[in-house]
Length: 399
Ligand code: ADP
Ligand code: MG
Image (cartoon, rainbow, N blue to C red; front, top):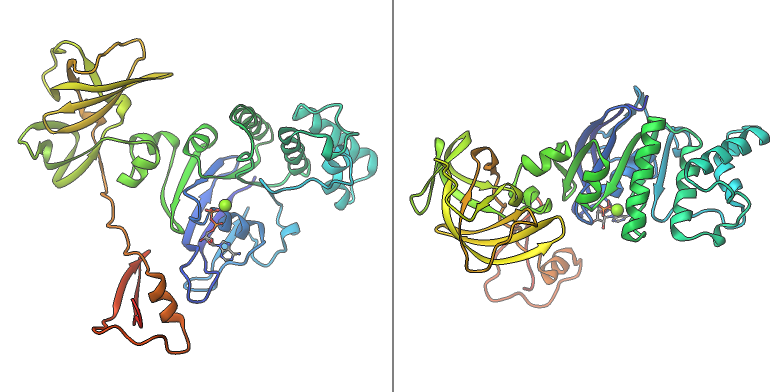
C-alpha cells in the first residue's frame, strides 16, 4: 500500500513571518512516484519533513493532518511512521562497512544477523554494488555512496519513500543513471514515492504526477504531459521552458489579435486572453503550406542547432515567436517562411500576477523595532504591501 493523504498542512517558522507552507492538501496514490517541484524556498523540504515527522504542522488556520493507509501519522514519532527520508545530505555511518550500513535499519528492528546480512547483500546487488559490502563509506565515489544510501532506505521496505533532491550533487550522466535506477527499483518494490526536485526535467523524467509549488502553495497538479501542454498559468509555462505568449480577444473559437489578425482556437474563449504555444508545436514551412487556417508569413531572425532540435527565432506581423524544428530542416537568417499554429496548440493561461511590492528592509526593521527608530520622514503614510497574498500594513518609521 502507501496511500498518502495530506490535509491542510501549514507551517510558519516565525510568528510574524511569511508561512513556509500554506494550507497544502494532496493525495498520493499507492505505488505512485509523485514529484514535488518548485523553485528554491517554495516549501518542498518543509512538506517532506512534515510527512517524515521531523516537523509538526501548525494547528492554525486548520489542524494539518498526515494520513498513511488510513492511519493518522501526526502523533507518531518519525521511526514509527513507516516512512524513510533520503536527502542529498543523508550520510552513511563512516565507522560501519557498506554492508553494515545497509543492514542497520533491519538491526534496529531486531532482524536476526544472518537474515539482515542476506537482505543487505541482495539490496546491494540491486543497486549494482555487489562486492562492496566490506568497504568503508570513505572508499566510495559520490554516486556509489548515493546508491548505498538508496539501498539502506529501501531494505527496510518502507510504505513511503521520501526523496529530497537526492541526486542534485551528482553530475549529469550519473544523475540520469540514478534516475533510471530509482524508477526501476520503485517499479519493482511498488513503494509509494514522493520526490522533491527543483528541476522540471528530472520531475518529468521520473514522476507519474507532478505537484508544482510556488511560495508555500500547490499551484498545479497533473501528469508531466499536462504541465507541458496544459499549463495553468504563464508562470507554469515559463517554468517548463515555455517562451511564446500572445494576447488576444476571444470570440468563441475565433481569436482576434491586436493587429486584427484572426486565429482559430480549439477551445472556445471569451474576452481578453493570454495564450501560449509550445515552440515544438509551431510548424515552419519554406513554402506556403496550403492550409486554410492559422498560417502566417514570418521571417527567420536567428537559428541555432540545439541537439535534438533546431531553434528558430521568428518575426511575424504581430510579434516574435520561437519554433523548435527538426534539426535536419535548414533555415537561414533573413529567410522568408510560413508558420502554422495548429488550433489545438493554442492554450489559454492565467497571466502573470503583478509582482508583490518589494519589502524595503528599512521598513521591515522599523516595523519590528521595539524602540523608536530615527525621526519619521516628512509625510509618513502606511506602507501597504501585498506580500504573497497576505495584506500587511506597516507604519514605516523610515523609508
Ligand atoms: P525548498 O525545499 O522548497 O527549497 P524549504 O521548505 O526548505 O524550501 O523552505 C521554505 C521556506 O521556509 C524558506 O523560506 C526557508 O527559508 C524557510 N525555512 C525552512 N526551514 C526553516 C527553519 N528550520 N527555520 C526557519 N525558516 C525555515
Ligand atoms: Mg529543499
